[in-house]
Image (cartoon, rainbow, N blue to C red):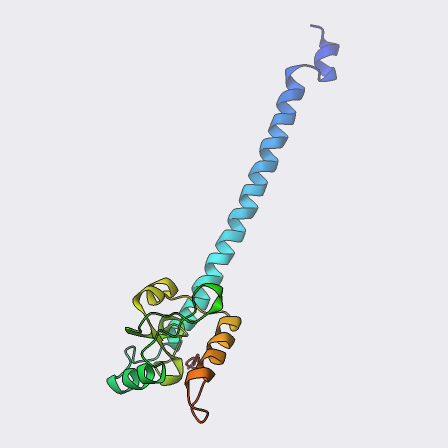
Length: 158
């Protein structure tokens, strides 16, 4: 091979250059994704810290609140099942509609009668505005007209 052929950049040196630039591009993309992930983790930590400050000092519903909430629901689970209908199982638990861990208050307005299956399935997830609307609409069918049907009360930030 002559010096002219080596200067022209033919052969393995060109392939190595292409490969090196591809690796650099991939590393750049991976680093960008890493930076985005770190920013999202920090944002989630800040939001969670605000919710911890928002928590009600009392986590459990009182006996009176449980009695009133269960009587209001007629002893039936008030959660939503498939096809957006009311669950037909008997209520066993008093659940925070807006989760206590996310700032939901321990009040009768935030109380939802729930069966074990619905309570476990919901966990500490926040319900969507649509689910909240549908629960309020279902409550109108079994709560007296003078009773409160609003659901989901959250503690204010200190």
